[in-house]
Length: 381
Image (tube, rainbow, N blue to C red):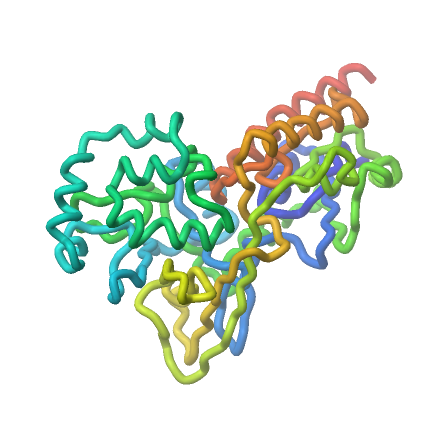
């Protein structure tokens, strides 16, 4: 008999199902799309391995998560570097000391940075909006040149209306010439033939895990799926407003659309995996080229042009009323389904902007709670 019903089939759900299976607990995953894996699945175009939903770089300080991912598929030692087109030239992102010297008004920029060198950026993020945080960090010239236009293109609203809480993870100024974006000790990109799809397939490769795709689960039909699966516990990894029929309102997300183009006649079309285009003269915000990370040896490449304001759920808009609304949905669903048998995990159900390692960590942590509930129910029967 299946003990756990998992709604959603993304990375969090697959990791959770894998951990439960390792403990001898079976699960059924119900996924709306035709395939599992959500936004991280890799595909091929013209023989070139690429990411249809934009670049995903596995980077983490969590050794347990890193070891788990590598048991599912081998990873290479790719280190992520990002270029940015600003001040009429291609520069590194984050901003390097040597790149400041190359820019116009370089002496003014250095003076503004020196004034702010001792700012505690993490502490500042607790009290300021995103614009104020950036101005405190780097001053007005770099902010206007690199940050504000890109941010407002991405989010579709003034930067001063955005929370600064996530800023330290994505915005920095380097006082050296280290070109790589992430400092984490464990980094890489899947080195197998199918990229991140191999990670998903590895997580699901267990007879105690049943995947059902093309299934649209809502609160209205949940009981039918619970009975069919013989499940005693429900884990939601899906957007809760959609699952509950938007009865309290709709959660706000900022979506993107990536248009991918196969270019058959060149090995590489740009100098880094990701190139940012902050200028308002560009309708896209960045361009992705997976071959830099995959290291695939083949003719041709694929470029992915990323456009914003699509009706997709990529980035939660972290404002108090959205946080309160998601909490209201969680409380409501615990009440409707049963507080002892209802769990939430992942970026969609928890309305969070988190990386892949955080998704897997949430799944592992949630599995401990789910396993405790399974054992408690077994003890009472």
